[in-house]
Image (tube, rainbow, N blue to C red; front, side):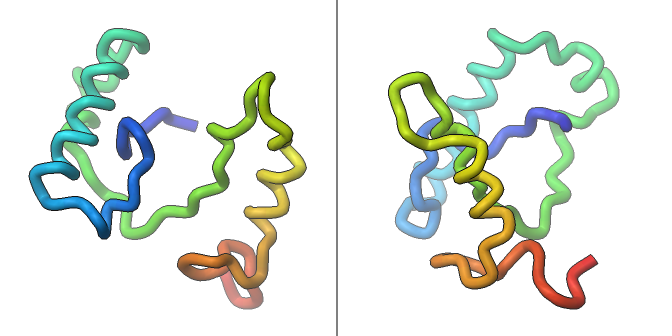
Length: 95
């Protein structure tokens, strides 16, 4: 799995202005640059690619020592046939 950039504070992008959305992404990019050695990533130009057509939020970032969210909760979200937002990831006919 490759760590990619999406946002710093996980806001609802549909409620942000374009400028706010760019700021969220750039703030997270700066954090990645400081914490993760991405030299190979940048050498390949992958820091410039945006090729995601959709995304699924499994909320794995909620797994923390001080939360009750577990890996089982992540699997429930992956297998949810009727998520609150978007479409189901694992559904009949999905490959």
